[in-house]
Image (cartoon, rainbow, N blue to C red; front, side):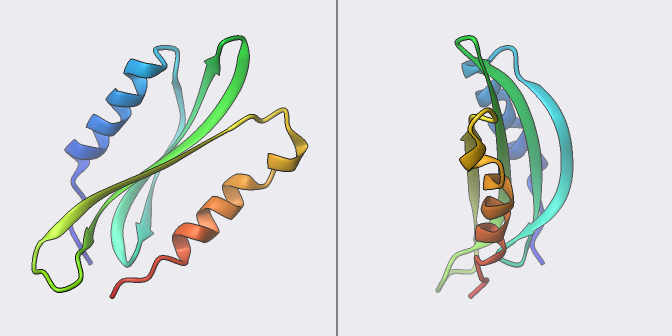
Length: 102
């Protein structure tokens, strides 16, 4: 359900690149968010001298009570050196899986 706006996802990646010029895309994949087609990118970059990982997800999702779709971009950033965050990307994906289309 839903048509993915690849141009908006690329624009979101470009905005991330402007903040973090050294960003490297590790993986891109097709996913679903709230029952809509989505794109996901796993990223690696430096924050100062520290390594950081991030995931950026974008989709066109339905808006309750309206016929049109709204662009939704969600991201998270983690410090991979912190053991407490080692499973955060799994938790992040679980949170996205819990978003329901209404």
